[in-house]
Image (cartoon, rainbow, N blue to C red; front, side, top):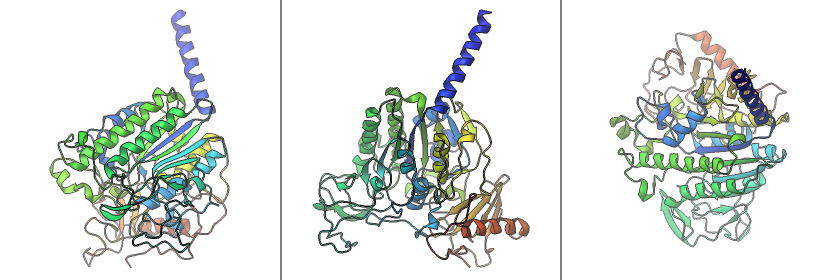
Length: 500
């Protein structure tokens, strides 16, 4: 009887723990790596991955790995737009490519964001690291910013349209990528000093005298950890930590150089893994582990700057079994690592093959907090909360739309993927400029049989093509891909076929 009672007691305690975890508003820590390929995480690519990532592997062992998670785009800015808004970026004015360090705000203050939604639910909200969604930089003469040399920036002025105008209580980081000027930190709505010199971290531009690219990844980790340590158990927090690595400039600190035995990129990825581990440890050490959801993912696939050919020659494949890399419409461009830990709810060591996208964060946090998203927000977002509990996602969205750096579209529905491009739509050969003249006008792949996208079925399966194309057109034209009244995109016409 004692043994049976003990087992019953344990079951009851477990049940109570799960109920508490689901009822209490959980803390949410969202860590976004920059240009980390699916295959750059050892546990996701055990046979063809050579970079050691013990922190991410450990997090995966404690939580769930999504094997079919995708960024909203295969490049930086549009992906970040989708994470923050729950809306595909091509519905905005940005139809291709990315913003730069002086780019104006892509998200208007009137639009609901994940941060503003959670702030309205009593969360402390903070953003650290790479923003890359535009800020209105102040000028000394009131004139438009001189974008070539940024010579008329008012370094003492007030920055508008950044994170703290979009629902974040606190922001510390840089305006865009680490290889885009100005090279200076921003805190809330002000620069932390003035740019008094010029430096070149790939691109030359104004820089603070003390700003060095090699310090930025450790600094982001330190700031995020300081924030976590200040939090109290009775007030939930949302921390969006956007790392600048392993994106260019590839600058591991001295203690990490040579650690991988592969190349500098692999060293930088190992340091990135370590910083992620430090942030996760800060949650645990603060006694917040049990009621904190940690999500670690990447904004797109691995960049060519990693010297992919060199890595592959040494047995490391940054995109694992998938074709392409950053900027491409093929899965290597946008299928990304996605690891979730939530003790008491997410089963340790579990996996999910549900198809999800970064745009799904908004619907998921709304589901978590029990509120309804307004009709004019999160137009493309679907909650993946059921998957965290080991259940299928009852999606009201027919499929997921992919987008490349050049604005090429693809549509994923079930096992099928239709690419409205003749080639990669990005940087991998063959792209649209050098694809053979007799290539079909588009591509269709059965990802169950052909995850590497090697056999184009476009001409042999016209009915499948017709079905997917019709659904893609409807999702674009309706201004939303979820249920609800049609909405307007921010541009009058969105060109689906870029290569015709």
